[in-house]
Image 1 (tube, one colour):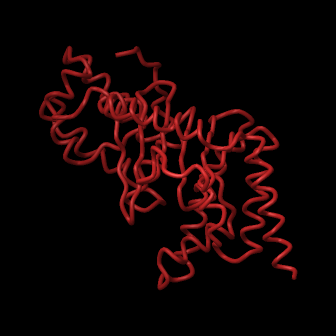
Image 2 (cartoon, rainbow, N blue to C red):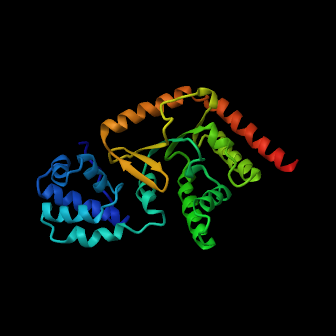
Image 3 (spheres, rainbow, N blue to C red):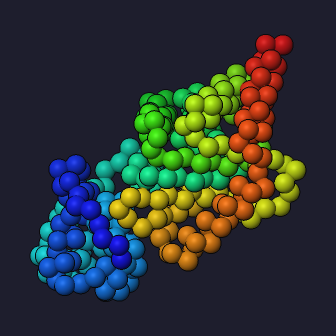
Length: 279
């Protein structure tokens, strides 16, 4: 596998654990693939642990301690990487997202989290759990909006989103909320901060009809894809799966509207929402 850059152990507990894992693996004279075979995971998964893009779960920590002869080091310290402000099924994906250098996402029903406004995020989270206390909703919204700060950097990460027309026409939170949400996407697109395409209804059946996908590339670790369902989600690092889904995304982009036509459609819909709210 490709060589990895040195990690800064002071940057985070996960980076420290990853650096220690790499040190212990190399001391044991094992490749990532060889260690992965002993844990019944891929070499790519070991690479993700070492790079800090995957969370070390207790079951893997125990096996690593056995295979690498590290006593109970990983078992004792893996808990330091487990704290998250995100739901359990999404926590690892959110943390990987923060380290990605490129994100390609297809959103069939909702505006992606990285492109959401606070009002839109609040409406989505309230619908997700209608009985949640307001302070819980506040925490969820804060967590989601914290993710959008990734876009504060002028160039990183590359974000390329294909939005289904259904995500733009599904009225979340009311017409004024939708108008604001679409204007926000248009602003990011006009500033060249994101690449946005709309997959129109007229495209008919397509390669991702069955669901959403988020492809993430990293500077010092193998790529990941995230699948999300109702109150569930999982990360996948299988190279053949990722290769297939890259093609899926490319085919989606090929049948979607161009960025210019997509921007025109997004701005027109935002104007329609705002006009109808006033009328």
